[in-house]
Amino acid sequence: MTRRIPLGRRTATATVILVLAAIGGLAPVRGPAAHAVPGAPTVPAEHVPAVRAATASVATAAERYGWGTPLPQASDEFDYGSPAAPAKPDPVKWEQAGDEDGCWPGNGRLGGHRCAENSGVVGGVLRQVGETNGDTGWLASRFGQRYGRWEARVRSSETGLEGREVTERYQPLLILWPDSERWPQDGEYDYLENDTPGGDCAQAYLHYPHDENVPVQQEWATTCGTDMTEWHTIAIEWTPDHVRGYVDGQQTYSFSGGADEVRRCIQCAPSMHQTIQLDSTLPDPDTPVRAAVYEVDWVRTYALD
Picture 1 (cartoon, rainbow, N blue to C red):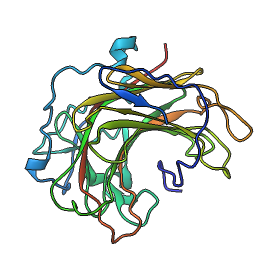
Picture 2: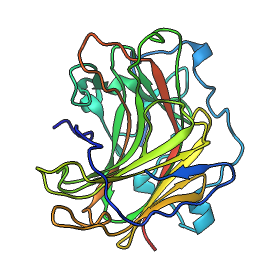
Picture 3: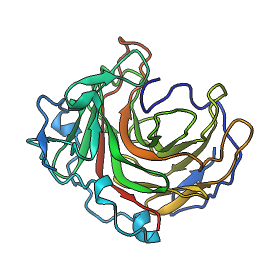
Picture 4: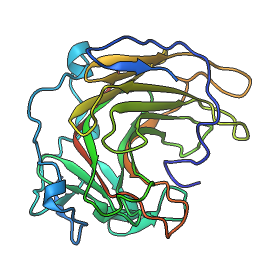
């Protein structure tokens, strides 16, 4: 199994409580020092969103619900590097694909790789670049905890004209992945998993911790009316009682319980850590994918009160 993105998902769902509310036009639907990055892939300037282009305040779940101060060892404002001299993500906080300099196999498919040079910090923004050959970025936090709150400010878009004729697309993701690396036994919370960059919905797939040899057990929620080419905050709260999601500070789903003979309750996973991924799903090395950029303004992690 390829690390952090298992295969064969979306074959089963569970029945648990889902809280849905209309949100200002959003329609939830069930269902240390910087290091230079040499030779990083480039995107034509006219197709790259300006750094900090959206400076207006966007509501956060942390502000609305009083989550307190972010944990410094597990949070990153990405306020280093520059467009002219991109920096590697802080190696104290982040594990890079390819062990800092190389590449790893991609998302369990035959095409594309996860490469260190495809993630860079450009003076206020983490930028992951997905190339038409499937080479892309991946990061994993070195901090794990059981229960907590995570929030990130993100946007994504497809870039340039190259690859526009193809149908394969990247998926921008924010994931809580088990520290044990055991999947599906220890669950997985994809609190952002979009089918395409820059879509108009924020999707989430919450995986139960479950037996290995059964169909994937998960819950799904999507919040539409959300232009993901613009900055939005996406958050998850994980407690002993529930798993809840938020878009721009508004709760969009809540799951609890759901245990049966093949799975534990949805909130019963062990310790997890944050990953940031721009994944491709190429079926073979010769299949191109639409180039994309995924940007993260900041990511903040909180302990439970």
